[in-house]
Structures are given as C-alpha cells and as structure tokens.
Amino acid sequence: MGRIDAPFGVRGWVRIRPQTESTDGLLGHRTWWLAARDDWQPHRLLEGRVQGTGLVARLEGIEERDRAGQLRGWRIALPRSALPPAAEGEYYWSDLIGLSVVNREGVPLGRVDEIFATGANDVLVVRGERERLIPFVAAVVVKVDIEASLLTLDWGADY
Image (cartoon, rainbow, N blue to C red; front, top):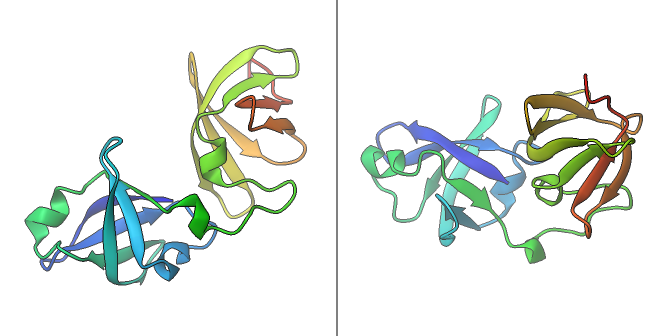
C-alpha cells in the first residue's frame, strides 16, 4: 500500500510514497502494518496529511527523527479485510505484484516487481532478464490469472 521514503522534520514524522489509487487512501485507516522484510508489525497512525505527491505521517512510538530514519524503505500494508472487494476486471496492485508475466506466445518476460500510476494509466515494472515498463491497459492485458499467479500480455519479447 506504500513505502516509507524518509524522515520528515525532527519530531518523528515520516515521508511516504503511497501505492494506492488516491494519494490519501492510507489516511482513512488508523492501523498500518509495517515491515522491513517479512516481520510485519502494527503501528497506529496518529496524524497524517497529503504533502505534494505523497504523504507525511506521525506514528505512535516514533517520536524523533533518528527513529523515523530507521523506517526508511519499510513497506506499509493493510489487512485485506480492511479493503473493499475489487470490482470485476479490477485488481489491487498487491494482487499483481509478484505475478509471472508471459506474452501471447508464452515467452517469459519476468515478474511484476512494482506498479506506478502515470495519470493516464498504471505501468507495470516487469523484471526478468531485463527491466520492462509495460502499460496496464486493456489493449495490452490479455489475461490476469491470480490463482495461477500468471499475467499474459500482448507484448513482444523484443519490446
């Protein structure tokens, strides 16, 4: 749902790069789960606001800049139960990240490593033998199979 980029100020606030449909999407949730790797820990959001294209927030127990700096790079998540179900033909980014990607011919292109929004459409960052930036649009997406962990695209291996 997001990533902590850096400390913000001297009172323990953090700067966040949200990975949500709307920039302020995380602010409606009082408890965030944070992890540097896979050791998820709950943290209570005390206050936060949109700042430019991201967020700044103050979390319970994080009182100073040095402690906020230790959270740099940590991921932010919410329990799936806190999210509404995705509409038909729509997907949460977290469902797409990690999927294997192949083209129509079955040629492996890599895995979805991250996704970002451009305003016009979302872009998949697919990493395999090289990195590819692929638009997540109907003209490119052939099939999303979450259960098989597979994303099939109309995308040439040499693009």
